[in-house]
Length: 204
Image (cartoon, rainbow, N blue to C red; front, side, top):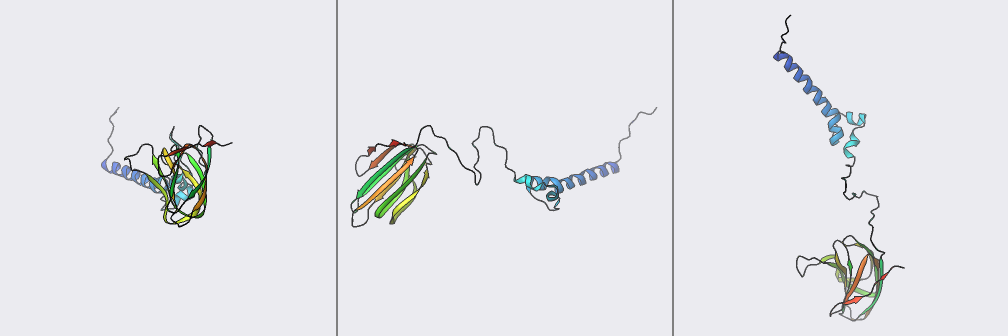
């Protein structure tokens, strides 16, 4: 009995290769491109329900922080209850005062201040670890016209002291009130001399 195996001819190999290539191209344009990249030139991906796959979020990496999604709340726990502080100031013409709160990176604070005249101000911070002694981060600045009030929320971009420098550029005395509530651990007031430590209280 003849047990020898006949090798396929070159024509048969070429035909098989061509069929395999054609099948691969069909799968590429009907399934792979719509599913992986959202590219659906033949509209087969839409018909088969594959186009939404490319837009699905990637599964989270184990141990990684969750990525915020539009419309989804962001929750950050803290080790202690938040603190509150309320201060009254009076500035004579051309006088200034600075009020700052020490916060950890990522900690939040609500604030509001209201004056009986326009104050120029800068809302800024100084990290505990600075690249140089004069480094600071500016968040909000109005050193020309000024405002008589401001309200908002703040999340510390770095661990350090964050707060306001207020200045009265008018020709009359200005009285204003500042209220803050948030996850800070201490407060300091700068009024031309060495800083004064200001006591802050836990929220009741």
